Image (tube, rainbow over all chains, first blue to last red; front, top):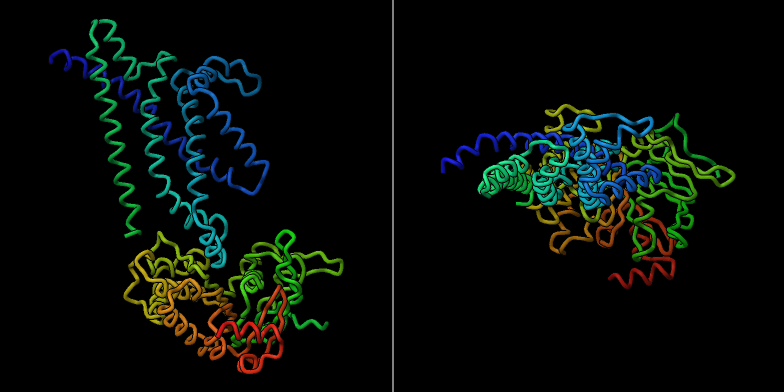
Length: 217
Length: 264
């Protein structure tokens, strides 16, 4: 028991790295995903085609590869090449990758809103922006909550990939103790941390779903 | 053809003027030269079999559908027109929005905003589009909801309403934008028979207030009793039109006769 308690401090430190990556990724990927979804549903073929290609690229290659590329290869790319420190490199890779998944979820949500809603907004004189902001997106939010809940839970666990950039996240910290102390107990403690995080997320999403379901009652 | 459209005398111009509208979906000609004009305060019922193009015609008047050829003016302002070479052009987008706000529309499937309460549905467009202050929008909405008999439902979400109630909210929502013309696209077709009465009563009250109304409907009783003018459409053309009483009593055209027989 004392051993477990002695692990809590260092693992909590790892968990803050995990949480930081999680929160920053979410804060960047959700708005970016929304912009991509709107571009993807736009009538402008070139734009929607470009976004389509982007989504294919980001979903079609491993996140770990993207992360390694941004950290190791990007500095040598002409024009856009920049050398990013390890954590920012991970954030950029995660945000770009998750934005692609979010974009597809948002697109499905936007397209599931009945055509009649657009027509009603249109005959009331609303512009495209007003229609999206006031009518379509509020209805979309409710429909994307379940898949978003899935995706954010996956994100919590995907954060463990940053060990390849030698960042001390929760899982890497636990592995350090496993290797040092020849016991698997740190893994179990780490699992408890992950479960706690996903539990909070699950709760949060359930609350949101209930709030958005009130107009069906 | 002499043009009756003049922006200088908007009051004298017809409320709706549609000339020679043509519209095709792919290879299907839906409208093949439909012309109709409505005076202020006139109630016109458009009847006809399904697929006759009557809903499409209505939707061309507020650019829910675009026409391929023809001329549409609302309250004397040109929405779309066709030049001598046959090129059809629409007014700029901002103009279109402004002109189309002269018409309110009621849909077959209501199209209420499900995430907003009844009151929010009615105040939304006045606040967002017209910039009406919240208090004034609410006052206007409450008066309209009282008029359609749903003042007590203001805080309900649409999911809690019956079809007839939904349609009456939709009418209030359209009226909240203070349109000069109301377009009704089969407003009772999605309703259970016992619920059509309440919607038709609301529409009748509107007609008595001299609202200009264009109603696509299968309710022959309503068309005969409330409309001044009845228009029978078939295969993308107006087959016959005239005073409603006369058209129902003595249809001149064979197809009108056949249609009316099948409806009664």
